Length: 247
Image (cartoon, rainbow, N blue to C red; front, side, top):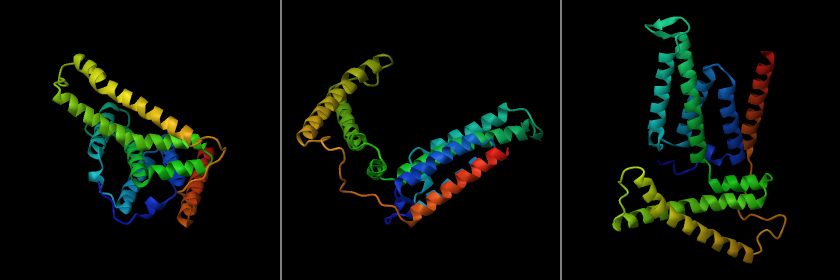
């Protein structure tokens, strides 16, 4: 999956603003029963993908998600029999239920994928620490994001090495599970414990946690686009609350 060489305005938005929009949109599509809102959110996500410079079909796992959404739509249409007939056994209530269920699923997946693909994980961690997250927790988050690719690479190397040594990973279950636990997971756990021990000794030697506050070399700043997006978020929340109270 390739993006444009120049980061779009979606990339440059403050991570916490994008996170707030993600949480609010996820809650909204499940809080309201109307199928219009999930469809509108899915359409907006598709437009944002285009503006961010991403080809939707190149997003990993997106074809599977769209297939699952279509299957969920067909399942709801086939199961729900209430309402007026539209075409044969298909009813309007079944179509509404199918569009609502598939729209909710796709809305959550598309928005989450958009957030992940346009947000630098370290910027998110630094922004959360700036907002009040204890820097010890922030350091744990940053460390986990840094070590995850390393452990994934080590798992690949261990897997290939065990295949060369004759480990039959293609055996049947439950023997295959035992082989994976013994020959793959055990070396990874040992490596993770060794890395954590070395990291703890290194941070202790540098006096980590001695001061109540810490400085960051990288600062995540807010701009006019962040303030505009925050205002839109507040307005949408106020509109939703007013509609909920009117009902």
